[in-house]
Image 1 (tube, rainbow, N blue to C red):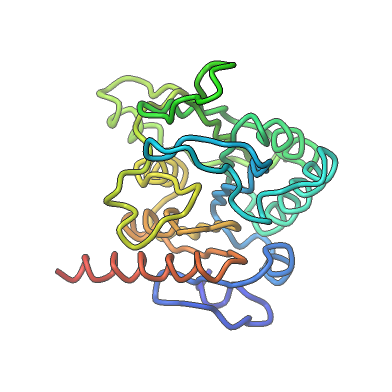
Image 2 (tube, rainbow, N blue to C red; image 1 turned 60 degrees about the vertical axis):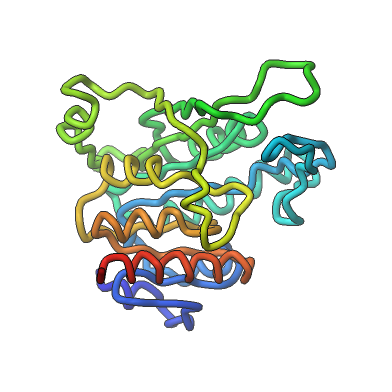
Length: 267
């Protein structure tokens, strides 16, 4: 599908070029305007609902865990209904043979997993991202949080058949089958040169996800795009990208990153 024909009512993009579209607004409202069965892959890094007035360590300093109102939930039931709602909308826009990846921590991922199955998805893999340089645990009352979970799922339909580039993943793993534990560092400072986002994912994670489950030219959706690491990785790999975020500050950061990537390609 032509990326510009994705929206039924042609909502005015916040930013667009030949490979990417950014939309400012609520994902629930905007996704209802997407054409059904139009997206090849969804990557989502939804709110983890970590903002509970606690503390964490960042750059060797004690800081608040609060990220914004978008990262707060009234209770576990509100969290679950939120996850069911956006997952249901993503299922409608995902092609029959497409797949969805969702990142999270213990604060949200179990709610996400339940919502996926209830909304008609079959989980393919449970990826564990093991961070080599996690922040220390300041409270010293539990083990250091050094992992995140990424769920990979497809539509739970008999006719659905997800794409997996098994050969490439094996090549990238030295000729051996790639396992579901991926080890690597947090997002480096070089990827934050245009600004910072509190939950920004490193590009190597997004590149692997995209290469594993899509082909060049495919259309990728990120309904909570933040700083658009998904979009930058998609451009690097020759895929199309649509990102949604309700914070203008983060979309401005996304624009700077996408433009920088475009300029780099011209050099």
